Amino acid sequence: MKRKSMKNRRIEAMAKALAALAACGAATLFPVLGSATPTADPQDACTLLTAAEVSAALGVKMDAGKRPVESDPTLCNWREHGKPEGPARNVMVTVIQGGSFDKEKQPSRNVKGTVSGVGDEAYFFQPTRMPIILFVNAGTVYFKVMARSSATDPAAEQNGTIDKTLATAIVKKLQSRPAKPAS
Image (cartoon, rainbow, N blue to C red; front, side, top):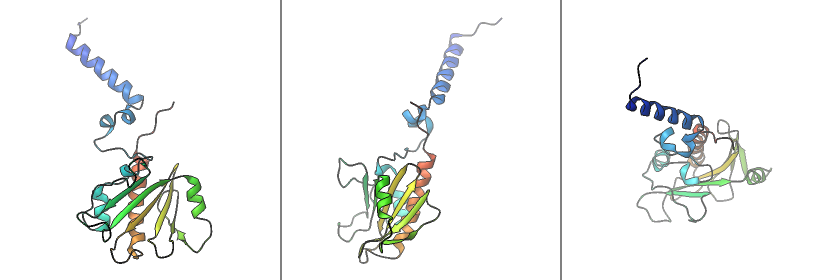
């Protein structure tokens, strides 16, 4: 019987260790092992979209998402690059609780109808003289998307289409994230 070299035994041990880590869900602990792209964290709104995705949806260059309130990871705002705050186009994503999702969809003149093809359930909500907001339930994650695609018309018709495009991207990210290991 042939004896394994020390180098081969080390390689074999490393391969077994990596296989054991993968079986335990190490990709969620060490995302670099699982993928080269950042993982969407449903508790951090700024991880749900990239500036490139928002730029593509609005058709203008957008800055990276920033928290309007640094200590609150449930809010993220992407702003048009190089524009002052007032006339800038922007997108706001907010991670919400299921109760907020259900409360806002109660029959009212502000609910503008259900939206198919986005998450498990979605609907448009539009407060008077404000941009339309898309509320989405995607499994155990609830969020809302509000795009302002026109500096002069905050209630522009295309906002709903942009909201749906961005919400669809968020749902895909949430669905592709690694499952959490059982505790």
